[in-house]
Image (cartoon, rainbow, N blue to C red; front, top):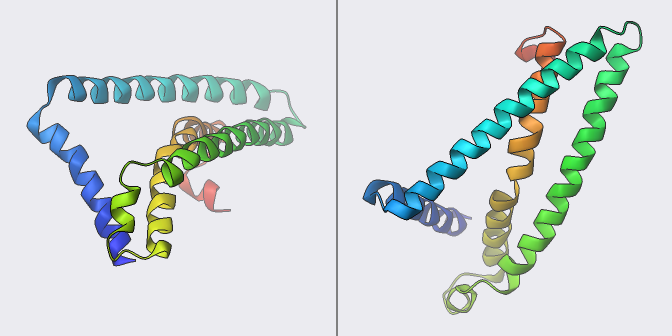
Length: 152
């Protein structure tokens, strides 16, 4: 497993190199996407917080309704994540340009599988980070709860 972690860290260093060398176009795209995703997350959080607050003002069935709304939204996030994982995984596992090189190294097939699985997971986890995290945070704020709310 150390081999897999070493290869993943090497890929992360490539991202760090883009930032350190200040490669103009690549850095602009990276910063642009980070700002865009940040704005989407803030907007989603505000919409969810306001919507869940309105639902909680209904009265008795409000707690169940807020959880139902969040549950339905998370099913949508799960479907997006699965579709993204399959589409990205097909490319990552079978069409990656460095697969032939990695197969010629002493890297076992098991390690190659775990490397590709970790790469695919890191690329496809955007749906959870961008969509689900603000929804969970808004749920806690709407119920006037702190961090222990998520541990129950």
